[in-house]
Image 1 (spheres, rainbow, N blue to C red):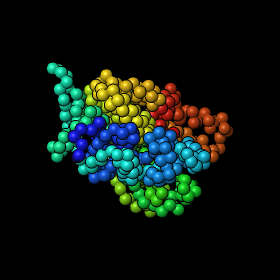
Image 2 (cartoon, rainbow, N blue to C red):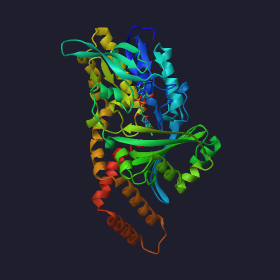
Image 3 (cartoon, rainbow, N blue to C red):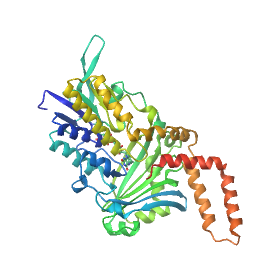
Image 4 (cartoon, rainbow, N blue to C red):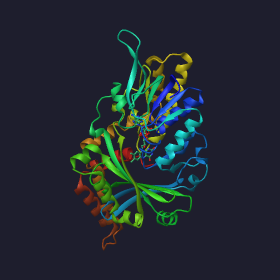
Length: 436
Ligand SMILES: Cc1cc2nc3c(=O)[nH]c(=O)nc-3n(C[C@H](O)[C@H](O)[C@H](O)COP(=O)(O)OP(=O)(O)OC[C@H]3O[C@@H](n4cnc5c(N)ncnc54)[C@H](O)[C@@H]3O)c2cc1C
C-alpha cells in the first residue's frame, strides 16, 4: 500500500471508520481505511436518519455538499393494530431551514461521500479488502501489542494503532479477545426495502411541501408479535421501509424477515402510502442491542473499538454515536502519537470519554428495558392493541352517556391485562422506541 507503517489503520468505512479516518488525517496522521465492500456503503443500510448536530461535529455544514435526501420536518409514532393506527407526532417547519435537525439519506450514497472526505484529507482508502486478522508485536515475555491487520490477500498492513469500526458483527473485536459471543437476544434483525415513487406522490401522501421529509416509527402490527419496529422514511423520489425486531424472538416464532416485510407492506394503512411504488433495493442488517452490559472492552495495547462494533446504539441513534466515537478515537490516537505511546494506558483516554459521554447515560438507562422485553416479549403488541381498542371505543359514536362510555373503555383495558402492566409496558416502550 505504499507506506511501511501507518499511524493508524481503520477497519470499516462506515460512519464510525470514516469519521475516525477523516479526523486523524486532518491532524496529519497517516491513515489507511480498509473496506470489504466494492465501495464504502455498498454493504450498509439503515432507515434512516442522519442527525445534523453530531454530524456537523465531524464536517461542519455537511448538508451543503453531502448526498442527503430530505430534511425531516415530520416525526411520528404509530401504534398499529389490524385496521387502525393511534398516532402521535410533530411537524416543525423550523426543521426545514439551515442548520436543520435531521435528514433522510441512503447509505450507499452517504457512506461513499463520507469516506471520500477522509480521502480528500489524505487517508488511504482500500476497498474490496477484507481484514481477516490482527497481527501482534511482542512487547515483553508475556505481553504483546496489536501491530496491524492481515487482509484476505495475505497482505499485512502495519500501524501503531488499529481502530476497529467493523460494525455489528465485530469479528475482529472478538478475535482480539475484547468481547465474547453475543446472544440472539442482544441483537435485532431488520430488513429494508427501498421503493421508487415520484416526489409529487410522496408529498401528497405524507402531506409535505417540496423539499420536506417525514419519518414514521411504527410498533405493534408490523413486527408480527416480535418486540421491534416498522419504519418509513421519505426520500427525494423513493420511500425506505424497514421492519424487524429481536433476533431470538424472530427465531422463536419461526418468522423470516421477508415474511415480516410482506406482512408490514400489506397493512391497509401502509398499502395506501406505497401504492404503485416499485421496489428498487432490498437489504437486511443486524443492530447490536446488547446495551451497556455487552459493551466490549474498548481499548487495549495498540487497538480501539468504535461505532456498532463497540455496541454504541441508543434507541434510533447509531450513525451519530458511531461518528462521535470515531472522533474520540481520532483525538486519542493523535495524543498517543504526540506521546509516542500506543499502550493501553494511554488509549484508555478514549474509554473514559465514551463512558462520560451524554449517550452513555442513555445507554445505561436502557439496561432495564432490555431485561423487561426478555420477560415480556408481547408488550409492544399488547400496548398497541390496547391503545387501538380504546381509541375505537372513544371515537365510535354510541348511544351512551360519556361517563358510561369511559367506564366501558376502562373495563376493556382492565380485561386485557392489569392496569399496572399496561402502564409499565408504556413506560418501557417510551424508553425503548426512541422515536424522537
Ligand atoms: C434497519 C436499520 C435502521 C437504522 N436506522 C438508523 C437511523 O435512523 N439513524 C441512525 O443513526 N442509525 C440507524 N441505524 C444504526 C446505524 O446504521 C449504525 O449504528 C451505524 O451504521 C454504525 O456505523 P458503523 O460505522 O459503526 O458500522 P457500519 O455502518 O456497519 O459500517 C461497518 C463497515 O465495516 C465494513 N467491514 C466490516 N468488517 C470488515 C472487515 N473485516 N474488513 C473490512 N471492512 C469491514 C463493512 O462493510 C461496513 O462498511 C439503523 C440500523 C439498521 C440496521
